[in-house]
Length: 316
Image (cartoon, rainbow, N blue to C red):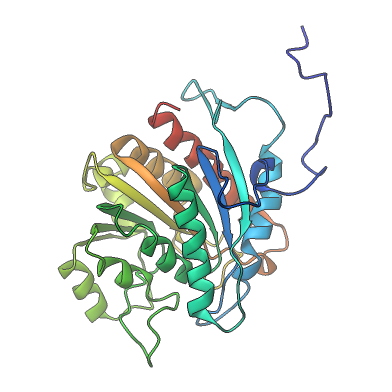
């Protein structure tokens, strides 16, 4: 029996146009009809050291074709679940980025996320530096409350530095200021950080729970998950530098001592079971610092697995 695999095109990963997971491209943001919509946010003017995350969305999309062999869903024998089966996913392309103009670029990203939310789909945003999270969270105005779960090496809780309030060191501070953001779980924070002690104190005062990689390993994933409020709407923001640079070298600010793949997958799978995930961004993939492409592959693999688990938890 052929199971239908022998009809039509074979459509191998290296053939065709690199949309995310080879999902259909929807250019019209007013006609999104899907369960999940992918938006690229190729903005990296918020970086404080190595730029290059503007090429992240393109790299992640290309890497994602590795996981798009055309079969119906992705069977996981450990869970005995076929993830992504029947999930309708579209790629709506990129928000328009206007060079040197943070306000306009961020507004364009926000418009894309708002269009996805208006269509009733799950927004999945490919960054870009972590400042793109600011317009993503702004787009949820009137749709809260939400709890944010952050995977990151850095706290990103700087209030203002030399007048900069919308760079990649500021997003979690800007999020915590939103009345509809009820709290933050900041996981993976470690070592020499871009945020001073006052920032940590402010974060905790404003409702943050901060755990390092070592603390999570010591307590275990299940105990870490217990600290996240149950039954709430959750927004996931994943900085690729939350992973160890041995598996994710392609990023602007690598920090040794990071998570392994399965640690993050188990955390995010647990979050998907614990609450309703209403938005996802994955940021700071800068492919030019990784000539093997493994960082972009990691990003694509994490996203496809997380999307699968989020939609499975929703019963889709």
